[in-house]
Length: 309
Image (cartoon, rainbow, N blue to C red; front, side, top):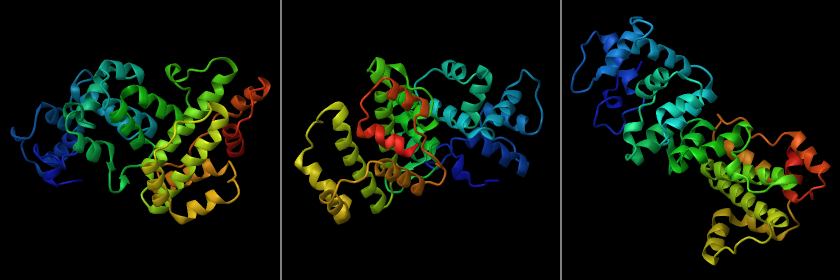
């Protein structure tokens, strides 16, 4: 149990999203009364929930139900946390996750109180997302990646990142191709999401160099599908060469790197930087089989995914 007042003090940068839960636990453990300068009605409801009081229609009962989400399935909790960082109305979030509105409200007030802090960007990144510009993700992936996507791009980007890391279908609005080319466009989008996650998860020079290698390799491999990409400015090329180091330059000047190294490098970066991210799923085998049946050209990107699966 946490007794650090900085974790619930109103003006503290270190106040946690679950500050009402921590405060209620502290009040129960010490026998202290609520302080109106700190505690609101939700702290009172939380005390009732923790001591087993409250009828089935009470806020305390909703808090107990919300607590089951907090200690239950990590994907469900992670998605709820992330969606609370978007601008979606709470009723929409509750419907998406199949939750009673009262339970979603209790969770948002007691276990992840972030919706009133939309303008506190630094606090949201540090305390709600678990991300630092110096040390990268400080909370387990992929869930912290979901929260960062929600904060940076709203519900649409969040849908894409969740779909990639859980192998769900992609939102239709993000796939422009139709017919036999649609599965291939889906795969390209997923690889780009992996690159984004890996670039944010990288915390060492070696990991960042691996992301740069993978990105350049993917751009080269993807040319066969999408055509030449926009030219990269000389300063960016020079910066990448410095950051990637001599090892990267030697490999670029040697024989072509095997295609499967793109995904292997990305997996290594993300898994090495954060042990909470145990796997990066690839599209189902039947999707790749569909491409074969439709006689879609097997570009290097598809070959990468075949090798990985």
